[in-house]
Image (cartoon, rainbow, N blue to C red; front, side, top):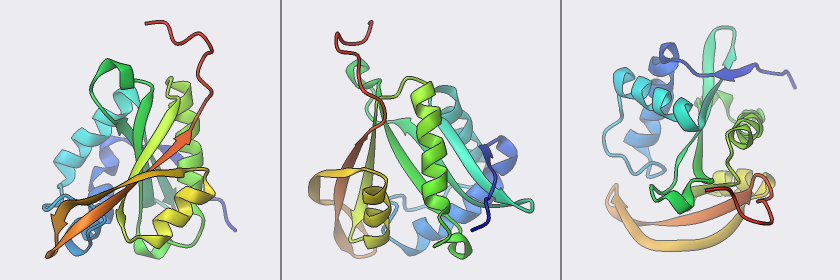
Length: 174
């Protein structure tokens, strides 16, 4: 398998990320957004993720094939060592190990920034995403039944958790 370079995303990647994400919003229930963000909003999301967490892209021959990012899971201070993660790939890039590669690099960046736990919400059913997260050490912690309505149906969301780094025995300095 050929190695695809992974790097920090910048505002110049916003259009490519928006184009990758749009079909997930428009054509599936994978994302609960109902209107796909354009490049300007995507650039804002990239900048926001880069401030505290990370946003990475996999790029081959100048084309962004996918991206992964971490973001705030909950706003309250006690959750500040936990982040929510997501990965999205261009359809032509699936099955090449890019989701795993993006997540592996993302997890390293998140640990460097003090994150201890990653969580992922997966709209069910979604066997490929469940398999990817399971292969990366995520375990299911619960299912929120019927919490989102999209494309004419109530949707369940499975929540998955992965330890990124062991917490200090005495607790973090506050």
